[in-house]
Image (cartoon, rainbow, N blue to C red; front, side):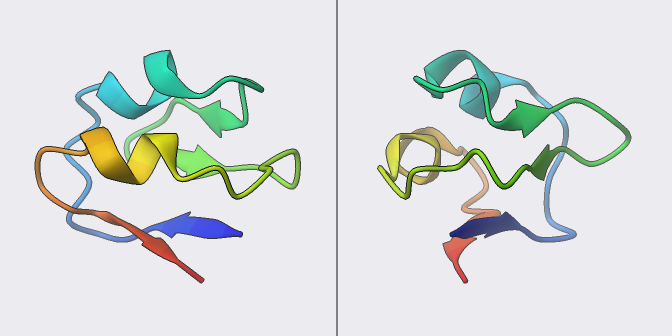
Length: 53
């Protein structure tokens, strides 16, 4: 599963790319257990805040 670290700026780019809507908004975005490990979010994150975990 992927995780979003503290470098997240909550820009929303990752959420719009997630095919299973596993990214939830907040001060820092989070990835839920619905994540399918596709990596789409990590490939579009402008600050590289999403890592395989």
